[in-house]
Length: 289
Image 1: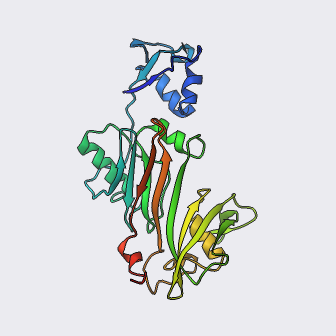
Image 2: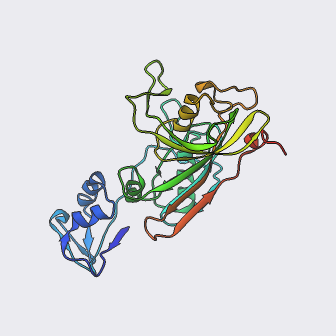
Image 3: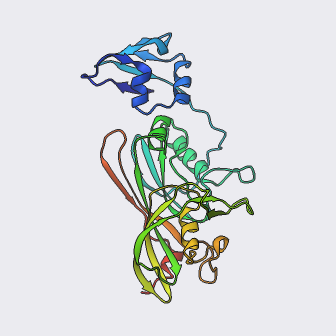
């Protein structure tokens, strides 16, 4: 059951206005108001759209979430969990969502399997994605309203930081890559820097240089597909192992990119959350002792 307590100091307002402030999207609200389970202070409400709420009211509903994804018993490296959020360290080679060609073995299958075994009544609501061969932290909401709040359309923000290994070194050693990204018209998968693209900004800092390579720490200010991979290739330093964007696979068989730190202010409690994931072995082996 989903439940909201209206703050005692709130003046009377339409329930839809209150729930919009709470992050309930229009799509989700339509499901709620037609669910037949909406209650205010424990009393059934036949026409929720006509309801106004005041300070101290408690509104609630029950809404079963549907999914076509098959739950599976897969290894799951959980780095943070509470009643609202889950943060998982995704391994190399795993998709976040199933595709028409790959229906099983994804992070979605594994998370739903974990929910089923643990008796958690939630669907799979990833806030962002990682490419198949990018490792690291993925933030997942357990309720659709939190998914909306943490999405680009919502007001709540979170911070993603990555470690990457590139050939050569960047000059200057730290800065912001500000270059719009668009689809590459010659490829189904690739993106490229283009004036017609969407705004894209990546902060970077060189942590160390070694053996003709550099270890970078990067933070996304925007979340475009392949953003870090495209930006570093654009600068002439494609990720080690990223052959899609010009990187060599001689030392590692996938792009050397790892989402190692994720931080946010909890959308419900306001508590500051920081999750960490150590560098995986294949990238760590490239660094000198």
